[in-house]
Length: 92
Image (cartoon, rainbow, N blue to C red; front, top):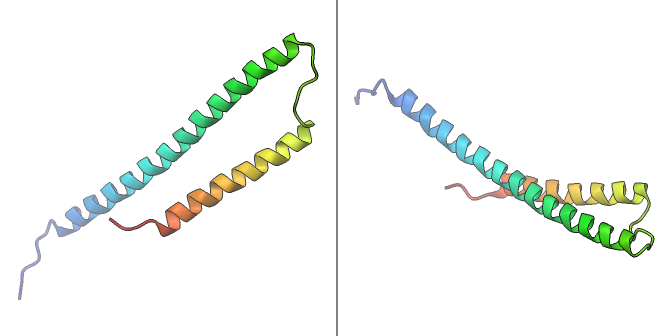
C-alpha cells in the first residue's frame, strides 16, 4: 500500500488557489477592458458635445430615460457574454 505524502493536501490547495487567481485575473482584465472602452466613448462624446454646442445646435441624443434604457441593454449584453465565458470556458 502506497504511503500518502503529508503535503498532498497543501499542494492541492495551492493548485486550486492558483487556478482561482487566474480566474480572478481574467475577470479583472475583462472589467478593465470595459472601462477603457467606456472611457474612450465618453471622451469621444464629450468632444462631439463641445463641437455641437460651439455650432449652437441641439444635442444629438435621446432623452435621459432613453439613455438609461440603452445603458441597460448594453449592460445586459456585457453580463451575458461574461456569464457565457465563465460557464463554458475550456478547462486548462
